[in-house]
Image (cartoon, rainbow, N blue to C red; front, side, top):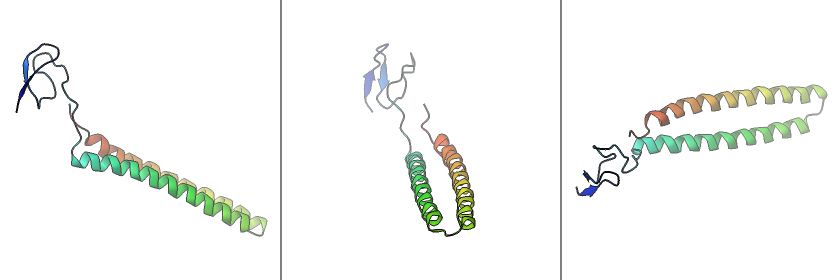
Amino acid sequence: MALINCPECQTKVSDTALKCPKCGVQLRKPKRGFFGKLFKWGFIGFNILMLIWLFSYWDSVGDLANTAGSDAAKAGAAIGGTIGTSMLLGLWVFGDIILGLFVMFTRPKS
């Protein structure tokens, strides 16, 4: 542990301190812990996965609607696509809320 001078008040401060105890200026930025990084990257990965999943689902629904023969089959494909899309979006929002809370609660303390 070394001592450094505060850039504002020139007081000797530990190099591991986040803030100067005398003037309160921030000396270095706090970093996330292991679980904080894990939840942050999990949140990002979940959003990318859901985006890929949604576009691939829309592609398969479009193929199904194009190959349907009758008007009733096309209407069924459209209704099913709408229901499936709303379920995927609901899962996406629910997952973002849960993972977002974990990311928020594991952020670094200042």
